[in-house]
Amino acid sequence: IVYIYVVASSVVINTATMSNNPWAECFVKGEWIFETRFLIYSLGYCLLAYIGNTCQKSYFAEIKKDPKNAPDHRSFKAMIASRPTVIAATVHSVATSIISCGILITYYMQGTNKSWTTPGGINLLEVWQTVGLPISISYFLTDCYFYCLPRKDGLIFVHHIIMCLCHYPVVHNSGAVLSGAGNIEWVIWLSIIGYTSEVSTAVMNYRWYLINTLEENWIGFGITNTFVAASWAGRVVMFTYLLIMQIFPRRAEYVEQNQMLSYRVMVFGHAAIGMLSLHWCVVMLKPGFKNLFVFKKKKVKPIEEMTAGFSFAEEVSGGNKKEE
Image: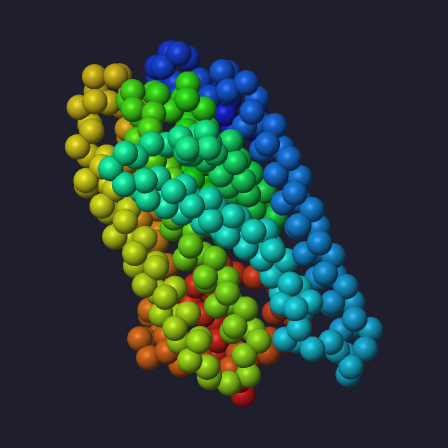
């Protein structure tokens, strides 16, 4: 997958020489650090997908065997059966949120003498390059296989590919120096701060859990739901800020370094993810602000609809119609 991805991106979008291509530079000079961890984490996500799919098959087999004594549809097993990829999605969102926020908190708490290397000798930027990004890119590509393609979810597929395309050049300094127009620290910081948006995904998965388990309205649901909506709106604000205040002012540097391809991909990526975030925020708020604060018991789906699979769009909107 890594070979196909990098070679295809190099052939299709590169108009410069190999030495001026951040995607190719990371692949050729990355010393296989990213690729090794990518494969390890990919196997981990495949294992989680296998567990989810096994749980789904087992749950529906029990229902078909004895429909009158079907397992509780609000049990943990039933929830995994309705959404087999939720385990991997939650692991990814929580892990990247903790790593990105932890790195930024550690850096900014140093006061005036900020350094990306901690007193203990840990290079925070390398932590992101060798841990955070392999965890994320491996998830996006495996999720394309286990969710996007089978469910034909074009928006999520586009989101995942954009994320891989924009963040892969940061996994090694040889690519980061080109994609950052000479400023390695800034472009890695840009990658890290963009990933803080995964906090909203982690909390949204908790909201999904509440929707599937609550029996009546609870104030905690309103608080959680409001936070989710606010965090998605915050995504739009953040990506707009990054474009206007961080990326656009550096255009001259990219022209000077002959890295306009990197610049255009960066602008397109932030604009596209910002627009997707705006779309999902509108979908979330479409039922009205009142629905943010009030829980409506979810209607139990017929088994035919449950076996049809999970929809990200439905999760964003809440999908909690009043039970009849």
